[in-house]
Structures are given as structure tokens and as C-alpha cells.
Amino acid sequence: MRADVLRNPGPPIEGGREPQLQAVGLRLIKGGAMILDIDQFTLEQGDVLGVIGPNGAGKSSLLHVLALLEKPSSGKVLFAGQDVRYDQRTLVDLRRQTAVVFQEPLLLNTTVRENVAAGLRLRRLPIQQIERQVTHWLGRLGVGHLESRKAHTLSGGEAQRVSVARALALGPKVLYLDEPFASLDAPTKGALMTDLQRVLRETGITTILVTHDFTDLPYLVNRVAVMMGGRIVQQGSPAEVLSRPDSTAIARFVGVDNILTLGDDIPLDSPLATALQENNTADRGDVVCLRPESVTVHPGPLNPGSRMDDSVNLRGAISSIDPQGLYVKLTGDCGGFPIEALVSSWEVTRNNLQKGSEITISLPLQALHVLRSP
Amino acid sequence: MSLIMEGLIKAYQLLISLDREILEVTWLTLRVSGTATLFSLLIGIPLGTFLATVVFPGRKVLVSLVNTGMGLPPVVAGLWVSILLWRYGPLGYFGILYTPAAMIIAQAVIASPIVVGLTMAAIQQVDPKLKRQIVSLGATRWQYLWLVLREARLSLLAAVMAGFGAVASEIGASMMVGGNIKGHTRVLTTATVMEVQRGNFGLAIAISMILMVLAYTITFVLTHIQQEGGKS
Image (tube, rainbow over all chains, first blue to last red; front, side, top):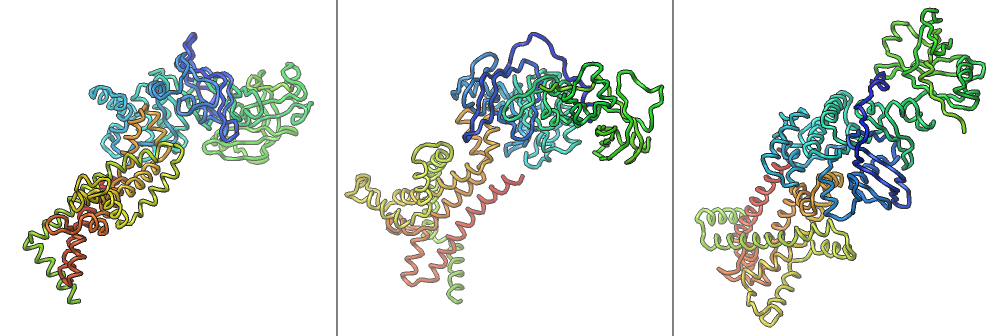
């Protein structure tokens, strides 16, 4: 999963679309604390936006405000270009154009089928249409065989699928997903994500996905907003945010393990420093960011044939080996500073890499991201 | 011991012989307490729902009043209903004191706070996250209340049982506003007291047995519905 983080570009971005959701000067204050402080926010039709950030960053609050489940303290939300008025009739009307899936499935105490039909019944649609849509989406989410089961007899994964089917059956203009995978185990999560990805691509539903796990992003979204302290601190494509974070705080959050200050962490006589200074990409005091997935580890010295011009090669030794599931995090001491690399367990076995093993670490220059010191 | 045996035998005989008088008394008990419970649900569920979902000044005062009312002594309820229905009282015009109608009113007064209180608790126990999900599904105010009440239906059955249990077993109010008139306002509880006073302990035990069986049967049926609803 990790290795794919940078490769999957997500759905293509088209130009010239209408904004589906906008927010201007949004503030949410609770108990004297500023929960949300967002000057400008736009979500275009067909966008699949991932909102990430650490706990307490205001991700869920933003989703609740945008889903019209919470009124902001000040500022306004625009739905399809129209100013949202916070009266009951407008709210019900707009909420009926949206659907929300929360972290918990939150099913009603009735059958699976009735749960998926619930929102459609509230809209007083013709019975046949309800039956058709319910059957379709139960099938799409692979829970058709559970339709007559009571909701509370389902497993967590099944229940969350029903919850997603209930949301999609409403044919929403905007779909809000609030940490929908956070309570699921890895295989269950993976299967649901695959199905959801397919549905989102086929339907083109404008979607907001709140998640604390940055590895979810490349699978589902074409845009990312990073939140910290109630603000949106960076927006861009998943690849941009994951490889070119705007600050060291963002870098740390999105799993950029190598955050090194030139001249401070990296000695100025290191080949890496030389390469960076030669290209004039970085100066003393600048911070160099590099994802551990972008680092290649070779056993022993590099033979001339595999030397690459666009990489900096550093000789060193492994100082620690830290298995992480299917992958292993290696830390190499490269002449005074550590570089972390994420490699497959198979590579570690094949090359017989151990603590103290002599290695060469290749850092592709293109993958290096420099934060200029102010 | 012989007294209990005598009572059991008597109860058996009364039931087997379908004693007309006992059947009438039992039927009246069911009718009065059942109707009173029904009225208390009509008053209590909307009021409990209102108190659980609407915030307004003075709400706490009202909630405390309801909670006090849940323990309202039947005798007190009986006294006030009597005063109101007295021939020269504010509602004396209707002339319903010492009728089953008066008993229904008194018992509804006793059961209503219980139903209000338990309805309030039942609605507040519904997960706030589920309530938010219901809102997000596009529910109007009324649809929201309907779905939340439906989620709370098992707890609401407990309110029905508690309400019926309270009024079927009370005696103070029935005695005061009904008067234990034979063939007219005599119910199982007032009949039991009367037979005890007359020294007919066997008959008293027999009647109390019938009351217990009645209460148990109704509670059993409701519990069955409740548990099935929770399980299947």
C-alpha cells in the first residue's frame, strides 16, 4: 500500500467546472476556542477532496458545517452558488441534496433494506422508485444478501457498507465521508475503499472525505486540504501534498520522515549538500524533505553500472531496522546524518541487510523537496 | 398456611366457576386502568418528547415537577380529583364522581408523570450521533421526532408497563373517586381491601391472586414484544 502512495494520480481533473460548495470567512467558536477559521474554501463539482490533519485540527467540524449540520459562528456557506440561509425549510431542502457517512455506521434499529430506504422515504418518493434504488445500491455495495437482516446483527464492515449504500441511494450532489474507514480492520477497509473508489469514479459525485490517515488519499481523492489548528494550511493534489509539503509540520504529518536542515543536520561537505548547492536548489539553513518511499537502498558499494545521474548516492551503514507490517523502515547513517528508507521485507531478506550492514543510499534529486528558510 | 391454601382453592373455584361478579370486577379493572394508561400515553408521550427535545426557559422546573410527579401518592391524586369533581366543585357540573370515568381521570393523573418521565429518558438515551445521522438524512422536524421515537420504542414499552402497573395496583384514588360501589366502580384492589375488612381473607387472597395474574399476563405480553423487538 505504501509504495503506491505517490503513483496513483486519482480521478482526472477537468477544467471550468461550477463550484458546488464554497465557504467565505468561516469561523466556528465553541466555549471561547476557535475551532474553525477558514477565509476561503471552494469545492468544485466532481471534486473528490480529502481533508486530512491531526486530531483536533477541526476536520470533522468543517465537515459538519459544510454538511449543514452545524451553523458557523460567522461567515457563510454557499451551496451551488447560493447563500445558505439557516431556516428549517432551506436546511431540510439542501440536506436532501447531500448524504453523510460517519465513522460509526449509525443504522436505525430495523432491517438492512429499511435502513437503505430510510432517507428516500423521508423524501416521499414513489415506492417503486425507492425499491429500485435500494435494490441497486444494496447490490452495488455487496450487501444485497443481507437485506432482511436486522441492522444490529451485522458485523462492523457489513454495517458500514449498508451505511454507504444508504448514502449513495439518495443520489446526493455532495457526499460527505467523516472517517468512514477508521473503525474497520485493514482487509475490510481495503475492500470498501476499492468499491467506493469505483462508485465515485463512475458517478462523479462531489465528495469530501475526512481522514486522519494520509495513505487513504491517493486511492480516493484528486484534491487534498491539510488542516491544522482550525485552518486549511495547504491544498493541492495528493502527490503535491505528500511530496511537497508547505511546512515541516505538514511534512511530519504526511509521513515525510526525512526532514533535514542543510548545514545543521546535513554537513556542508556531504555529497548531498554539494549537489543541492551546485544546482542552487538549497542553501545553508534550508530544510530538505524526502519521503522514505523515494529512497533506494543498495547493499555494499554501488557498482558503476547502476549509478544514476539524477540521484545523489551516499555511502553509509544501517543504524536501525524497524519492521512495519509488509515494509521495513531502515535508518542509514550517511556520514553524520540519518536517512530513513521504506523498503519491502523481501528486499531486506534478499540483500541480507542487518544492523551495521554497509549500504549505499540513492536519493533521487527530483524527489527532494526544499523548504527555503525565510 | 391453611389461610393461603384456602385462598388458592377459593381463587381456583372463582375462576373455574366464572363467578359473574368477579368477572365484572376484573373486566372493570382492565377497562379503567387500560383506558387510563391509554390517556396517559396520549398526554405523556408528546409532553415527554417536547421536554426531551425543546430547550426553553423554565424547562428544568417542569422536568423536576414531572420527576416529583412520578412518585405522586395515589391518595393525593384521588383527593384532588375528588375536590374537582365534587358536586359543588369546579367540574361538579358533569356529575361523574363515583363513576368509572372519575377513576380513569384519577388514574391518568397518576400514570401521566410516569409516562412523561420515562418518555423523556427514552428519547435522551437515543445516541446523539444517530440523531445527527437522522438529521443528515433530510428529516423534517416531525420526521425527526417520529424516527427518534421509533428508535426509542423499546424503552417506551417500559413506560407503558410502568404506567399500567402503577394504576392497576393503586387503591387510594380508586377508593376516593370511585367509592367501591358494587357492580359499578368496584375494582380488584378495592374489592381486596373490602374483603379483608370483612374478614374474608380467603376471598381477599383469591382476588389479589387474580390481580397478580392479570398484571403478570399484561406485563409478560409487553415484555415479549419488547424483547422480540430488541433481538430479532
